[in-house]
Image 1 (tube, one colour):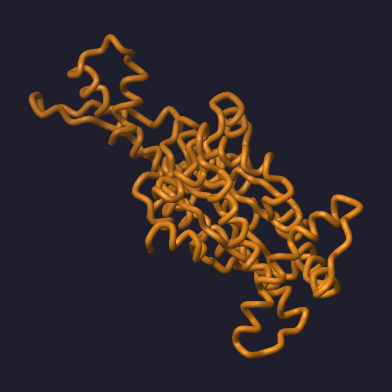
Image 2: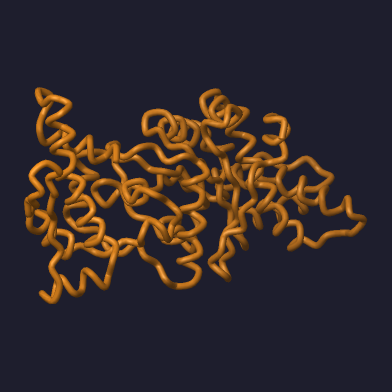
Length: 336
């Protein structure tokens, strides 16, 4: 009910007494309950829109025994014209504002979402996407205005690949303002550390985001190219790259080498495809570890548990994300 008290305070102003605020909050709470029904129940929305059902508010006076009828919610028309949201209970949260924001999108007026809860939203959104049943829907003018005027408060920062087959906002069935997205070929930090690290430090600092996701994907062209180059140059000194792409692939060659080493430890001789496939996961962990090692801001917040750092691999065929959890290196740092 904290939000109810906050709204009552905003409506009455700072000169209102505690008694006045408490009394007014009762009325605010009635309309909050009505608005909740109109926002999250499709059957109720349909009946009200057809004029077959009315939702009225009222307050009972304990002393007089009289009921003060408040009428319909002032926001009824606005809510019926907006899209219906997924009920909070479905997503496992007790407060709708945590999931969708006070303005229908997340803004700085909403509380920070803890890392585990943000991760839960990502998992549920990806499941909806993979099933072909997204819920995010369209964004209306009021939602855009809230993002423009109030600001952003993304619940997750995502470092993903620039591959056009991995549309991150769609993959997680998210709305504008939900994700702070960074993308480059190979979802790597090595050759873009200034922009990637600086952007992530801004996100978990100024924007107070509590979850960072490093997301690779199957059949990654950058990793495949790096694997091919690694095997070609194996046992020899590679020539200095002549362009940015060459430098990127050379930077990822260590990932391919680590993947081959891990696969060979089982006694088998892995193929180029097997190395490339395994290197996708190795690369995710490498980017995670790089963040912790090279950004004091990120490292301190992750090691302390204030920020959650998660890894994943998106499957181009199924649309599902394989969740990797924390890297082995980070687990050792945290004593897990």
